Each structure stands twice: as structure tokens, then as C-alpha cells.
Amino acid sequence: MRLEIKDLHVHYGKIEAIKGVSIVVNEGEIVTLIGANGAGKTTMLKTISGLRPITSGQIIFNGEDISNVPAHKRVDLGLSQAPEGRGIFPGMTVRENLEMGTYVRGYKSDTKAVDLEHVVHLFPRLGERMTQLGGTLSGGEQQMLAIGRALMSRPRLMLLDEPSMGLAPMLIAQIFSIVKQINSEGISVLMVEQNATQALRTAHRGYVLETGYVVKTGTGNDLLVDPAVRAAYLGG
Image 1: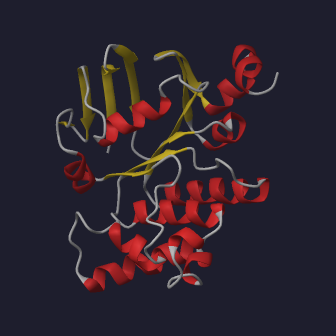
Image 2: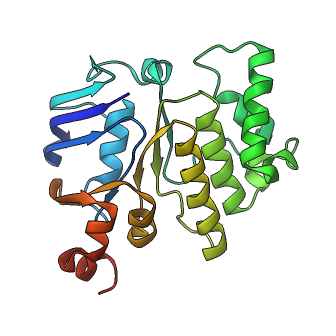
């Protein structure tokens, strides 16, 4: 599995949000995108998952140009996303939310059971809440549900958009620990995260976005100690 973004340009009307970005996620990597609000991070993930059209450039996934492939077919190819704001279905139970992750792939019931068991192993709290409506969960539980739903499609690459947003520090540590565990199971991860310190500690490599451009790239450790990155995103 390899994701390669080549000279990507994306517009919202006349406004260019992504301006010639090129990034790579290799097999087995956790890669993070960091940057200020409005830098284009979420637009990048939406474009990769097929929710935003490209203006020009290429999205190559596992050797195939998927630049114009519909979003639901990208899931079938092995891409899944846990969106910013979680995007769960509040009127559905936890079980129903998770099963929605298998919808495109059309799993049989016995396969769903295996995947549900795996998600509950990662997130025991969800196992305790299977019949509870998604909208009644805490913020941390909803984030677990969003990640669990994305896992139900058996992705090869998971896109995570602000997984720690609005969570208490203890839950943030738990979420990033789960990200590492998911990666250890052979799933590559591309993550957008405002908590730049935690993201860079978790990631193998990172890219810094500013107003639609990649302005810096390096290993997570290299970016953690980079004076410009520290001053701009890590509180000095």
C-alpha cells in the first residue's frame, strides 16, 4: 500500500485551498499533517477520500490513479475516514453505527461479527454501549465510535481528522495509543491533528501545511525539535 499525492490543486469556487501539494504515505507509516486553522489540512483528507473534487494533480493509491474515483469506491479499495467532528449517526445505536462501516463492502453477518469483536477489543467501552444511541455517548466515546466505524471497512489506509478534538488529556493519550495499535496491525494512517506535539510523537513522518502549501517535511522527531515548528505550533 502506498498513497502518493502529486501536485494537488483544490478549489472552493474561486478560492484555491490546496496549492500544488505533494505528499506520500508509505506502507506501514503513520503520517501527520499539522498547521494552523485554514491551512488546508481537512480539505486534503476530504479530497483523498473523494468528498472534494480536485482541480488538477493526481491521487495514486496502491499504484492506481483514483483522482476521479467516487468516494464509496475508494472505501472498497481500502480507504476509510474518521471525519472531523466524528460524524456519527446520533439516532442509531452504537452497533448500528459500527455496522454502517461495512455497508459499501456488503459484508455477510458472520464477517460483521468478527469485525465487531475486533473493534470491541480495541474499544471495550463500545462493547458496553452496543444498544445505546450514538448521540447519548460522551465526546470520547463518540470519537471511539467514529474510529471503530472506519475500521469496520477493513481499511489499508485510515484517514483521521482531529481525533483528539475536544477530549480530556487522559482520553487524548488513549486515542493516540489506539492509533499506534491500529498501525501495528498493518493499517497505514494519515492524520490531521491540532495537537501537534502528540501527533509528531506518534507519527513516523510529518508535513507542515501553511495556506495550502507544504512548507516543511521530516520525521516526527525532526519536526518536534525544529525551532520554526516549535515556535509556530508547539508553544515555543
